[in-house]
Amino acid sequence: MIRVLVVDDHPVVRSGLVGMLSVEPDLDVVGEAANGAEAVTLAAELAPDVVLMDLRMPVLDGVAATAAILAGDRTRGVRPRVVVLTTYDTDGDILRAVEAGATGYLLKDTPRADLVAGVQAAARGETVLAPSVATRLVSTVRTVAERPTARETQVLTLVARGLSNVEVGRELYIAEATVKTHLIRAFAKLGVTDRTAAVTVARERGWI
Amino acid sequence: MIRVLVVDDHPVVRSGLVGMLSVEPDLDVVGEAANGAEAVTLAAELAPDVVLMDLRMPVLDGVAATAAILAGDRTRGVRPRVVVLTTYDTDGDILRAVEAGATGYLLKDTPRADLVAGVQAAARGETVLAPSVATRLVSTVRTVAERPTARETQVLTLVARGLSNVEVGRELYIAEATVKTHLIRAFAKLGVTDRTAAVTVARERGWI
DNA sequence: ACGCCCGTCAACCGGTCGGTGGACGGGCGC
DNA sequence: GCGCCCGTCCACCGACCGGTTGACGGGCGT
Image 1 (cartoon, each protein chain N blue to C red):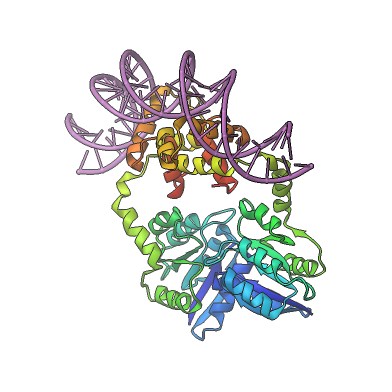
Image 2 (cartoon, rainbow over the protein chains, first blue to last red):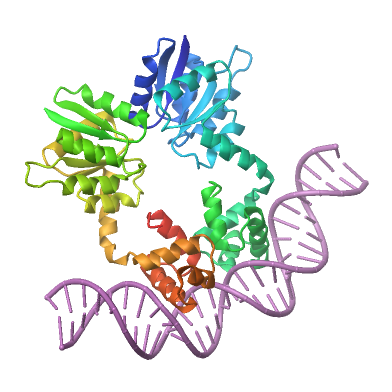
């Protein structure tokens, strides 16, 4: 019997997942959580085999909750497998979720049969990735070194709000020249040549 | 007995909605559709009292499906009430859905009780709006004249991809001067002073 | 028929941006 | 202790952008 914990802030989605999974004879939904903090508490309490985790949630998001759950007491037996379940394959948190130790990454438009199969595979310790997620993941890994630094990202965020270089400098207490340097470097990493495209690309990849 | 048609491309969500609604004694889920085209067909076939409609769907989106359903044969009795059900209250399609004739607008994080109450209210012909949606709606209506024209939006879309004014002009077969005119006007309507902020605001409001 | 909005174009100016080519100090890993 | 990356800064230039003013034709409503 595979013990499953369902984590999602939408009652509709929780209800749907529970309904889909609990009719399977070898699956048992042992709990539901509406945010990351509840998920961490319940995971420790219920010791599920698989946690189905939404990413975007109030209080504590899915990435943080995944990290917290998997960081938990390593001495006491097996840790749960975390399968991330999100709406968009463009979500910039895909990489962060995998880094946090997620075993799988499925999309919410997954058919029932694939969802059940994914949970069962995760319980066996296999990695389950939706095809489109797998594609994005390899292309991301391929360009992992190309991610802007923290400071560059910060500058990009302000630029996205429409601030000029001088204004960004004032905001961050640095010279305009420094702002321009950050931007030029960010452009190179994003493969663009102007600030507007940079903002678009960074937003697409979930970096700002 | 209120007859309900559930429309959503995600099996999980459909299952959740059906589970939540069908336990109510006065609600009867008479059908499910996975996209807008199916919804139009089933709405004509099943004559439901209420259609619970997702916005983002393949084939035919929720706005178009809503318009199609409500445009249907007006001579034959009562048309269904369409309640839009979406994930984000920031969705730029809120206004378009209301324009298309949606009776209500609920978010997917709505608790079960509110969802049921919303469907019942819609069946009675009442308008049901999630509080945050209502807030956005009035603020949108207040600035409804400030929306960029089709051509201006088109220019903004290309600008968002990082094209320069000259490049946009080449793409649209118009002079650079015209591109600049469109942009200046779009800036005024969006309340910004540069292209990057314009793209950000337009994206926020779901206009590009 | 008239006005109004949309889309088109021109010339001009000042300011900003993109890019180059440097430079320096601090933190981190080996 | 040495390199390397990150973050900071400067000066300069050409190109592009933001803003203004002014103009013209077509479609749509009254």
